Image (cartoon, rainbow over all chains, first blue to last red; front, side, top):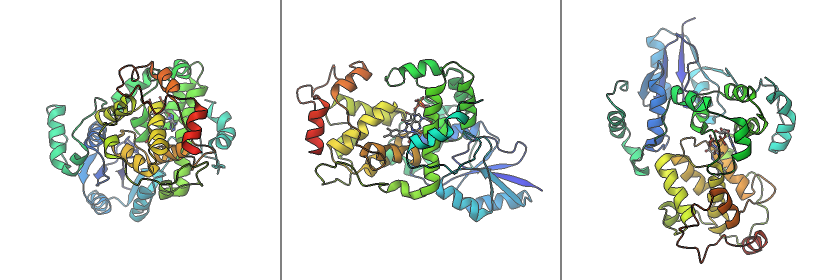
Length: 123
Length: 255
Ligand SMILES: Cc1cc2nc3c(=O)[nH]c(=O)nc-3n(C[C@H](O)[C@H](O)[C@H](O)COP(=O)(O)OP(=O)(O)OC[C@H]3O[C@@H](n4cnc5c(N)ncnc54)[C@H](O)[C@@H]3O)c2cc1C
């Protein structure tokens, strides 16, 4: 199935090498230095850079490539997650800190660390 | 479609200023820190977990500066964890990486709730809470060489050492009685690694709305971990608000 990648600011890395990718800037209140940083990351990647309405532009990009499938990097960010849902995009957690498991007790870091320490310290 | 070809960094910055005029209200500084995987890998190759563990609390310590690259997924958390495990004494560094993973997991559960107090503040002193960051704090004009220095560095580079973030957060929240959200927003705007998860939840940890007690510090602590860099030439040496014992500061702030 023809696939395109929607790249967002929590996943500035190649996700599906060979698949066309698009990144869309929207106004997030970033300072110029943050925008410059993001832009330099993007210039090293094979990605179309756009600005404006994320859902509209990603849909249009997918249509131009005749793609029925959109994939994107997993993130905990609620806004990006909602946009991905809106787009019907699959979220891929390609290289997490530790292989998922969980859910963990997140009341305090110490509880979480107790549960994951062994796994985290193993290659 | 935005442009991808530039003759120089200056040319790219000029283009971005024109494309994002709304960003210029936060200043026109551009960081020396370069974006991209090449720059990230160069830092990654220099990571030394053993030196990190021994020196990370010092401003001159062997910290990684990987923050912005992890924040934006240029490097993956799996990749940096495995990198540390291939070297001697990786535990401390891996545990710090785990802090990021932990805050992100909390973010995944509570979403925009990172902007609200997670718990009641403990041992709050005078209740009046300012809603805005005082102008002279944001302008680096408090006369406190440490705090003014941190603000200037933050604005110019988009980076602050973890300890400086803690001191600044404690100063603003506990000494200046500012709602943590105002300072958190200021950090998010300027940090290259600004992240609603790590940032807001760390502010809440300092404030004690996500932790069992408020974080405070004193001059001796700051002087030690900065090697006296700020205190030496500080114009407010005589009325340093931090120049007391922990007990005295505790009394003063939370009595
Ligand atoms: C008030 C306050 C605000 C903060 N805001 C942010 C933020 O917006 N974004 C952010 O990524 N971190 C934030 N931190 C955590 C920490 O200060 C930074 O991650 C760290 O200073 C980044 O510099 P470094 O890459 O050299 O860190 P190193 O010490 O070299 O650590 C390596 C990596 O581990 C992770 N890490 C280390 N310490 C912490 C920590 N305490 N919490 C979470 N992750 C950690 C980071 O990804 C960091 O890049 C904040 C801390 C405080 C006290």
